[in-house]
Length: 94
Length: 462
Image (tube, rainbow over all chains, first blue to last red):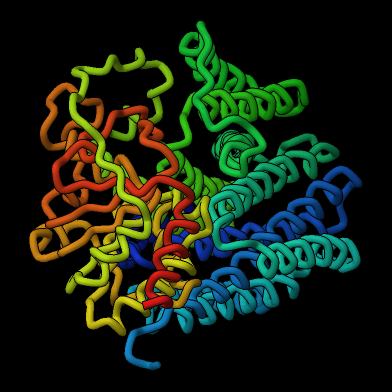
């Protein structure tokens, strides 16, 4: 039964993603990509458990490496997106 | 459900809602920055609440990983040049893929002592998928990064047997994947899966040329999300599934937009390495008319409406600030200045928009191809800066041309066209450009930045 729920989630999330992203204007496509870099760093959440739980050394090392890589995406992705979006300005305010 | 687990899952729902809200606010430049902050808060909620997990006993490894990754990420985000955004995004795609691969691997390694009894066939299948997609994303992104940053040649690398080798990889995935799921205790299958995934990522990207890079980055962006989603299925974590798919959908939509803008199917782009090189259909006859920058000034001084069409060459020449300066001078002279941006201009989706935003060009002066084409006749001068294929009339006029049918900015319909270019050679796609030979076209040869600065100086002397 749990698998059915997961399939449900997958389906709904995919549709939601398409509807949301279709509305992003072309001018913001680069920030969208760096922003999705940041969001895909969500792997961090899974990696935290692998890194911090009472596991053998190999698992801990793999988990910690995953934490480091995902942190690059999260921290770097959000910061660079913010930096970019801060540059987008409307006219008239001169 | 235990109370801590309940809290964690409720917080994941909240985090997902914040991600969705953040993406929704990204639909307009005026709210986008707020959206990014909201999305970051969602991430913070998800991470902090995960740390409450009972399985986490020690924090020093986590801190070590986070300190290293966070410091590098922050440094990269602060120091990267806007012209280098394509390679940075590409590199980050790769990190995302690698993180998912390692996470998938760790779910296997932590069962090594328990004898894999806890892992069902379904879970093992998702682990294989995580490792495959994550591995392909990682090595593919590294190659894309190498090409974009100039560490590797941008040309497509093609050798005989490439097609057969790729097909062998796909068959290998099936065989090794099956063996892995049926015999998870044998690490040989795990390593074979990782090796196959990494080498397939390299194969799939080296055969794609520089001009097709926008498609490849967008696709790898999508893969990095799908890899996170697969990892979520492997460790049965819903927030990973939902969020991974949001990213997957985003990358796929961008890929689709890029392909449409080049009038090619995704398959055609991905398999371009296998196609025979295109023969030039017909030689374009005619004479190129060259105009010195000083004379270009006189035309611009008299112009009422100017359209700027930037391309990758503007990024290479770092000419965006000079363009902005010229815009101010033209506007003070009573001329309207607008920009037309083709979806595949530059090396990633929206690349030109960011460069112009960096140079303080307001975003409401940037227009898409479909908005400027109907009123092209109204522009006195169109300045093409470092763009070629996106303004190539061969896409409309020459049936035999490899880019025939691609939607282009129809600059040739304006009263006058200035093409700022280093030399009169063909563009990245290797296609001759009949625009250079049109009666209303003037070539202003030389470095784009120097050319514009010369014109700016003429304004000053006036």
